[in-house]
Length: 113
Image (cartoon, rainbow, N blue to C red; front, side, top):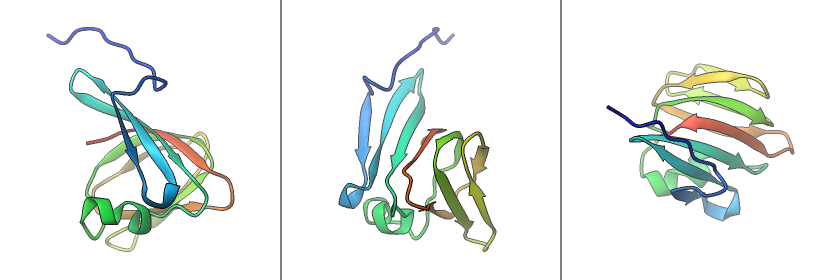
């Protein structure tokens, strides 16, 4: 049985930096489930700032989360597009590119594999 656990992003278990200083994801492990707080600077794009680290053509991680600040657009490998903003919950299946819309940084909390 899993134990009750709570953690704060001010003391993450892991930090993943994006290329070109365009942001980072702070991760906490909750009984084997990773939850991330992503900060994405204006100009961030998965295909430019994460693809070189991931080594895949598109993001192959499923994300379920909530946008806290800013706007992010998403394009699935099948061409489907959607934009998310503050207050939006989302499910991003594997096989997508994403980028920040506008000049404001974006922040979201999400599950991360």
